[in-house]
Structure formats: structure tokens, C-alpha cells
Length: 319
Image 1 (cartoon, rainbow, N blue to C red):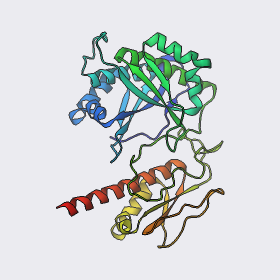
Image 2 (image 1 turned 90 degrees about the horizontal axis):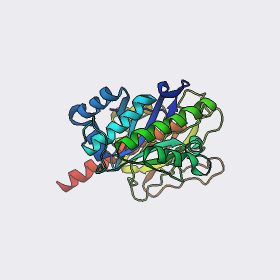
Image 3 (image 1 turned 180 degrees about the vertical axis):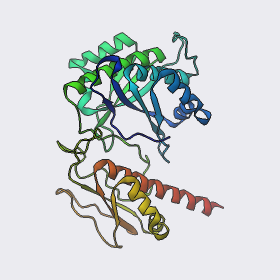
Image 4 (image 1 turned 90 degrees about the vertical axis):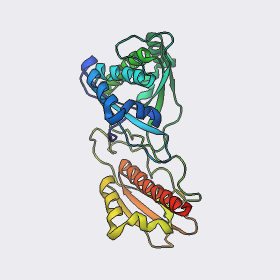
């Protein structure tokens, strides 16, 4: 199953429980496996009983988290999250949560531009949601890497998560009706540990927060192309290029980015007046050009390829 590329919480212009919404959250790989079930049996049951579309992103080597995407009418989406918590806790779907039920934390990814609406003046909205649902809410201060999204952690039993999700979704739908957002940059997990000690990866892109006219998950007009520069070990350039350029062409196609592997000795250039990235000895400069989400996907695919090759080399050296 693959991850949808739309924003953290997208809402249609309908109102109330009939409005469609797409909510994304981070889940640990272990919970993802429980939610999916053998041959997708669990996730299919959640889809059937809730009426929502539920998708789990692929796992990424070195990253303990995956993205859970739930979309559909708000009623269906909030119900799905209640069922997801029940599935994680191995509780029956058709019974109310009991006092002994285990609290589960759902880490929603909310566009920074919408977090203020969820928190409310002086935290009034969060308090209202907590009082109504019995769940505990906590908004992160900083944004997720390479994105304009923050984490809203919602902790509680299944029924509390169900109710809190409905309230949060309603706020996001109302906020979207007042002022549609086109500038959200969605978070994509990548390998947590740097794949190579000393590799000079320059995080972010030249302008991670596009202004009006920037690329938007809801089909807004594309902004100017941006560039990111990374370095990869010289001895692994071959695995990135592949036979006859097959691998690099595949990554270009999947990410929609232009990827150029520079000649040995080429150095990074300054972007928007920032310092030029410096490579270590035995490293090759790679220049990626495209829209920010495309660049992010290209970097992710490149690092996945490098990580897979590194693991392959480790296995063959230990035999």
C-alpha cells in the first residue's frame, strides 16, 4: 500500500459530517502491521465498518514510523480512527471503551497554518476538545523536517480518539472554508540515521516554505523550480545509476525531479546567498531540481537505494 501525497488535513468545501477530509498521522511500524493485518484483513475490515479510505505508507529502512492516511466523510474518518485504536488494543469493534482500556496516542500531522485554529485563543479549543472527548491533546512547537506540518498528539481510549478526531476534523473543515490553504508542504518520513557517516547531506531546499503561487497539494499553481545538493559516496555512484542508467531514470520518473550526478571533484554552489555545501573526500555531488515535494521524494528514493546497497555489501562481507 502506498502513501497518498496530499496534505496533512485537507477538507472539501462541504459542511458538517458530510464534508470530506483527509487526515494523516504518524504510526510506529509495529502498530502499522497490526492495523494492516495478514493479507490486509484488518485494514479491509476497518474500511468496511467505517466507510473511510484507509492507507498505510510503505516502511522506510531506518525509520520506525509510517504514515497512516484516512480520508472520506468526517463521520467515517473519525469512526475509522476509533476502530484503529480498538484494533491496536485488540478490543472488540462493537463495544464501548471500558475504564481499563489502554490509552493510545495518535500523532496527527496538521498544517502549521491550521494549528492555531485547533489550539484556539489561549488554548480554549484544545481544552474544549479535551473536555468533550476525554482525550489529552498536545501540539508540538516545531515543524516536522522539510515540511510545514506540526504534530498534534491525541491520547486516549478508542471512544475518546473517535470523538476528538471528529472535533479536530470539524475545526479543520471550517478553517478551510474560511481560507483555503494551497501552501502546505507535507512531511515525508526518511531514513532517521544518516546513511553514511560524514556524508554532507544538506537538509531542506532553497525555499522550504513557498509563498503564494508555490506548489500546493490541492492543485495550486506550481512555483519556481528549486534546487537541493547532496553528496553520495563515490563507490556507490554505480548502484544509483544502474545498468544503462536504468536506476537513476527510474528515480527521476518516480519523483518527477531532474537529478544530475556531477563529475568527480565538482563542488556545491551557494543557493539564495547561503553557504555552499561541502563534500567529504571520496564523495560525489548530486544536484536535484524540481518542486519541493518532488525533491523530497527524490532524496528519499536516493537514500533508500544507497541504504539497500550498503546493507547488501554488509551481508556479503559478513559471509
